[in-house]
Image (cartoon, rainbow, N blue to C red; front, top):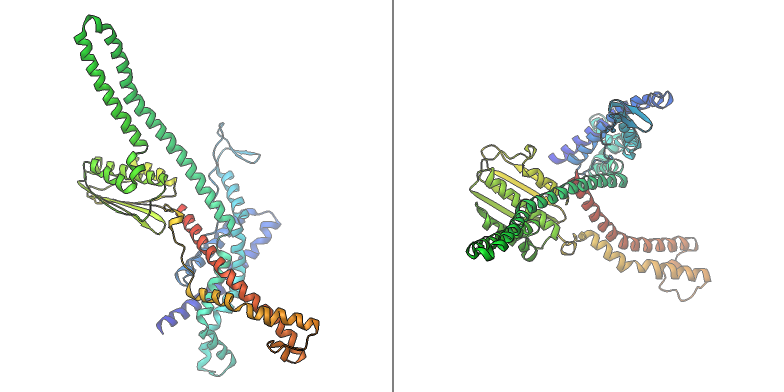
Length: 500
């Protein structure tokens, strides 16, 4: 009973908001004439902002009150205007000294060309009617005290009984117009991929510079020194064999050191143990070489792809280095597990805390490395510790190792009934009877129900049987397709939210 009273309160509140939308609709209609009739387009952004504020509230209430999540559908905002080499800002054929007007024009065009703007406006104009039809009849039972058998009161009581379906209908109506379109989803995905591509290119260039620097300062310098030492040995081998022998010993030591540095450099590009044994054993080997006392927990049912493994490995390596060098930690805990389709890694240390990516530490490099795979980094590092870093790499598991959610039982029953019984009304009681009726067969129809009815009722029943059989087959084929599409759509929305 308490839950039902709460639902009635939500319905009345949503209905009242719908009635209040009439004033906002009137304001929009009043501003349409000066905006498009007299060219006062500067009124458009404030009106759009007002409409989006209202629809933002509707999406929030649909998620919290009605249990229907409605994602934000708007196209990504335009980037800020950038100056030309001469310092001026260009918008189409106009030049400006400041970015104010180019930004304003870009923002106006962004709002005007976004289909979600007009869908929000349509929802706002029709919402008072939808709320009045679906939700406000619940207010009529107040008159039950004065006129208990009035028809309006009886209608309101019936509406109160149908409250759950009314709220579902209102949630469906809200999601129908306020959910994202395919264009906005694709635009958001493209913008995210562009940003990831730029960050990946920057990170790759930084890695190449690091490798070049390590080669120049390490192995290359040792090889040059070895060449000079060998030249000196050529001069001393006849005059002073003992000195030449001593120099050969130094060359051998230098070659061993150069080989070690090259191996370390190769290991820094892609460790052999990672390629051969996988992420779990590679992290365990990394923990053995760390000066910290490390505890590694691995719970992986399948092995991620090689690029994902590499990103996770080097991110963990950087976190261990930060914990030992900057955090002053003694113990570190590393947990590697799966969460749905994502690879989740949690690194916790008992250091002094205070880690902040904005201070230019290696955490920013980890964010750039993970961004290439849509990864999300979360840091909890209060002053005094401990520091906990968690990052997720979505879709790190292979598609072949993942199981799609099964079809719900009630839908599976409908599919089974469609395939099992659809033939009965469609063929023997529908198409076969229709052929017999057209050909004028009047004998031998003991199994055909429609031919036992009076003449005016035979064709309607035949058409009904054919339509029923077609509907059963359409349901049997359409429900699995809809289920697959919904699974793919949920995955797409998850990707979009992670990108944002």
